Amino acid sequence: MNSAAALATQGLSEITTNTWVNGRHMVRCARVINETHDVKTFCFLAEQPVLFFFKPGQFVTLELEIESQPVMRSYTISSSPSTPYSFSITVKRVPGGLVSNWLHDNIKEGDLLPVHGPVGNFNCIDFPAEKVLLLSGGVGITPVMSMARWFYDTNTDTDMVFIHSARSPVDVVYQGELINMCSRVPNFHLHLICEREALGFPWSGYRGYLDQAKLDMMVPDLHEREVFCCGPEPYMAAVRNLLKANGFNMEQYHEESFGSTPTEVKQDAVEQAEEAEEAMEAFDSDDLITVEFTESGKSIGVMPGETVHTAAANLGMYIPKACGMGICGTCKVKKVSGEVEMNHNGGITDEDVAEGYILSCCSVPKGKVVIEQ
Ligand SMILES: Cc1cc2nc3c(=O)[nH]c(=O)nc-3n(C[C@H](O)[C@H](O)[C@H](O)COP(=O)(O)OP(=O)(O)OC[C@H]3O[C@@H](n4cnc5c(N)ncnc54)[C@H](O)[C@@H]3O)c2cc1C
Ligand code: FES
Image (cartoon, rainbow, N blue to C red; front, side, top):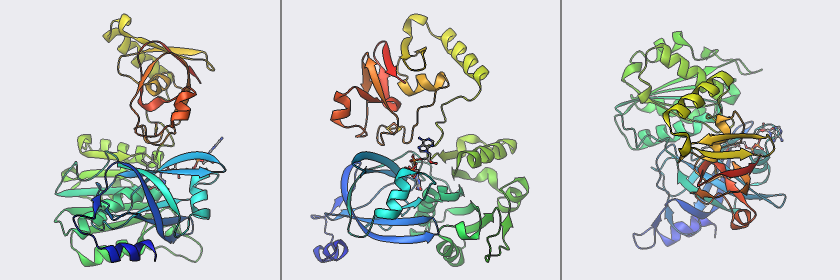
């Protein structure tokens, strides 16, 4: 009997059914759905009856072993907690990417794997609003799709404008479902923008990029909306610029980065130096804690409470960072000496810790530390 049938047979009573809480959970792949030529959705069930409640927009981190190496990656939960008997993630193949391609090529129905979560501050529950603008580019559609599914399934009055930008018509994820949703309720307004046509797939909808003219047409009441945005960094930077140029109150703006570029890294050397100088002036230099990086030969003083990752970012150094919450393990670095307080959420093994590794995103120096980087 497969997991779905077992679940149905057992029934979901108050006594036998648990609610999903942040932690490590074993889940079994119940279905793999081809969304587009390079995007797949993976649906999971728990081994024990569990109701998958979470805040739409939150993510999980998969714990995998690929070529005998442990590896973790975060993926947004693309399903909605309104369908709590299973949850799904939707993954796009990244050219040359380790995990996304491995998932596409290897994960099949019946496979068991551990996931961590659900976590994430980017969600529509913590920022309730009567009107929302859901903006996405590419696979950044996943968190806003979870939000839209939640609003739709629960029959809320929340007025949704959903604007999705894709490369071409064959790259629009969830197209059929989106069209179905906007054909059934009056509070879901869908706008699809394609950069270009695909051979054999003409496109009569909006063409190009989201710009001022399109924004005016699609969202005349922009200022009344809570905005949730997710997509590649250049897309989100363009959206931020567009909103700022419109005098939009950025407190109503929320975004999720999939983490390829750490937002903390300051690109401009002058900006870095000025900000570091301002910070130094504001604090007694005796309060600053030195973080030294051996390979680059750089060092910097950080304020109490600042992380090793912030120290590196202030120096303009790139340390990969994904979840920023000590879950995914992406920001792991080796500590040569010194003490840190590491508040992680399972993103590092005891063996790694014993070998001197730390997660830079959640490690606060307690005194001078030296990092191998
Ligand atoms: C909160 C959160 C939610 C996310 N949600 C989703 C989601 O819903 N769907 C989704 O598809 N993704 C999501 N992501 C992104 C996902 O976590 C992965 O980053 C993505 O799948 C790529 O992982 P990968 O292992 O395939 O690529 P990686 O192996 O990490 O590689 C990424 C890129 O770096 C390049 N690269 C790798 N190694 C090197 C090297 N040595 N030198 C030069 N270049 C190199 C690769 O070619 C590739 O272009 C999310 C990320 C976060 C943080
Ligand atoms: S970025 Fe995920 S653990 Fe640090």
